[in-house]
Amino acid sequence: MNSVATLIEKISSAVWGWPMIILLLGTHLFMTFRLRFPQLKVGKAIRLSLTKDKDAHGDVSQFGALATALAATIGTGNIVGVATAVALGGPGAVLWCWITGVFGMATKYSEGLLAVKYRVQTKEGKMLGGPMFALERGLNAKWLAVLFAVFTALAAFGIGNTVQANSISMLLNETYGISQTLVGAILAALVLLVIVFGVKGIARVCSALVPFMAIFYVLGCLVILGMNWPYLGESIRLICRSAFTARAAGSGFIGTTVMMACRFGIARGLFSNESGLGSAPIVAAAAQTRNPVRQALVSSTGTFWDTVVVCAITGLVLVSSIVAHPDIDSSQGAALTKAAFEKLPYIGPLILSVGIVTFAFSTILGWSYYGERAIEYLAGRHERARKVMIGIYRTLFIAAVFIGSVMGLAVVWNLADIANALMAIPNLIAILLLSGVIVRETRYYLWNDQLDEDSGEIPPTL
Image (cartoon, rainbow, N blue to C red; front, side, top):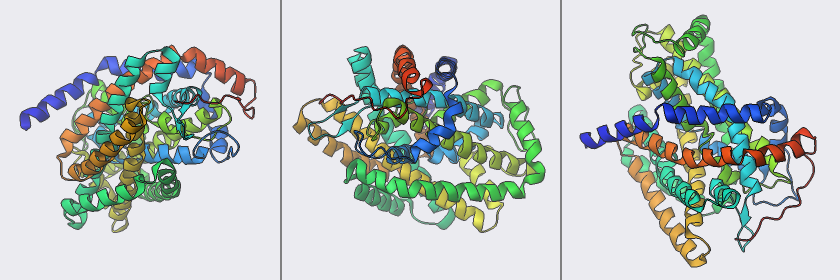
């Protein structure tokens, strides 16, 4: 097992080398400039996310789609993931994670637009979309679409399942002494109860859960930042300096290089906000929206809330806690997170527990939908085959929730990083090669101020 774990770690390091970093950040920057900084429209996008397009085609409201996407993205990557980035890449990883989020909003916008532009509907009227349909219908690259769907189905068991279940079970075991086996069994039962109702059931649960969990967690973090206020300025300077210069060991931090800070910050940034990953567009395609650009704007707010706000606050909490308390062990992500929140007596561990449990559980729900849509795509037009494959997938997914609860954390995280990279590559290819379509739609609806116009396009039947 040790040799397998070492091999997986080497593969993870290889796929997250400079080529992947350049491809990901390059796409973020390219789409940002080509779309004239869509990040500046975040206020308009937030208002649209709270507006219903009742007469538009779709399965769930724009907010329901956003809540489901946020449920899948606001997960352990926002807490343990950021801590892991700090532990392995130093304080500078926080800035790289934040930069990935800011520029990643343009990529998330692009993904959402393509998802609605190229979505299809089943005979029952259910909307299907995502990078696989953009690759097939927009680029006539069926083989890439199949690869993306395969990688998505596999990633659903990593980033969206075992990683989350593992974080919940370990936290509850270490904090409250609850058996990881028991936690796994309860989690599996709860997930089963929700996913049998499909996207509408998942959206309803996520629409109620996401606002509560995000507000509760952020308020708790703000209390901790208030306690660390004297060290906040020093922490921000340390984060900025360490992002661009090598750092020697000391002050509670391990020695790091710029490459380490960049690699782990960007990897955890993608893990957290999923911009460029191609997962969120799968549920964006189900939204009730009158044109692709409206939902694209709504989708971009997911990255804003997830990384620009939540991850940034988490990073500041962790770094300021280490600066304030140099005795904190910063070599392990999970231990670092626990130690930072324990500095707030009684309330801190509760905030961490509720945060991780709700974040991780909602992520499992969101990714169960992503994986199911990928399986449905691979099954093709054969209705009976789709039902059989979805049934098998749901059974395996529920089993993986239990298995993930008792697995080793290091192996799980590295497998998740590999799956993320394999998903991102075909999706980023679609965005870059279809950037002309994205610009054309954006020019017509956004730049010409026609966001209220109905596209009049009826998705073709699968």
